[in-house]
Length: 390
Image (cartoon, rainbow, N blue to C red; front, side, top):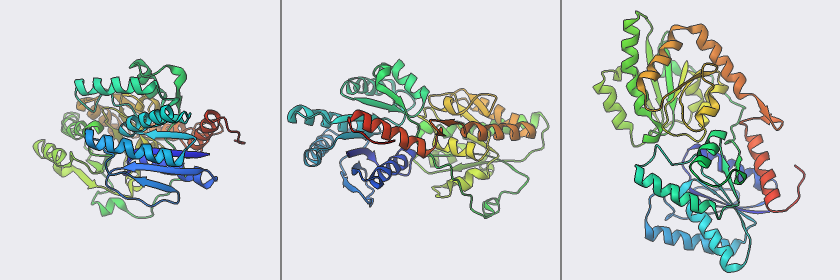
């Protein structure tokens, strides 16, 4: 089977990691794999790849037309069985290029799209969000299958009018359950004393991740602790980099809490850093799934998350953590306080997180890469009318 994968850019986010693992898995099973990707980063792979610098997130008519033509010529040359697009921009250009090729060459290449979370709120203003929603509705008509990472992403997309339910499948982004923790004292390296409670988060420091509301919650939390005469020292650990880094530091200075927040910047040892957190917080405005949340739960951490999209699939309110209103710093502070004052509850919810994330479906751990690969394989062979023993 010949597969073409298309993604907007290969950063260090979950969508890129998941796609590369999928491509390598199918390549290792003897399939013909081609990867098309944009952005500025050049990467080397065992399989064939095409880097198109004009494939970018921003709308640029000249660049987008150049990208369309380059992808069209790659499809014409490679003649794949399936084209599977990932992320919004690649999904729009890639699917319409494949459709135009099918139309002009009387072929029937199958078209699959994984948006990795919808962009209908939390990213843009109302007008721009409506425009992207309209484009997604039209693009869904030329798509054979759409893949959501979670049930709630699927439900919200259908409610927004993007395709009927029969076009959607739910395949979570695959995570390796074989987590290894480095044997070193990270708290000591970060100058965090053992008696401090660590509440933390990990991800891109961009508006949609809602890091601002996590930072602002610390001022509320300090006041709540003082009012209740709770003598617990707290530190916030923020792992990641992005365009909002300086803005977040400004907020911490203005709120007079900068001494209690550690910004690590981009780190490769994210798992180790999540491991030293007592409480994990995901304050996103929108989230297709949340790979960092899965890692936190595998590490037995209670999770406080915004009650949005795919996060509702990973956190059962009151069982393995708490769901809070999006953009509500006070609620975040109150739930962190609840977990600080009650160590027994914190430990119990952490254990529940581990049990929850280790549930099985289809004979695999629900959010494992093995299940993700199995479900993609099942889809590819069914949609291409090829037979294979699964």
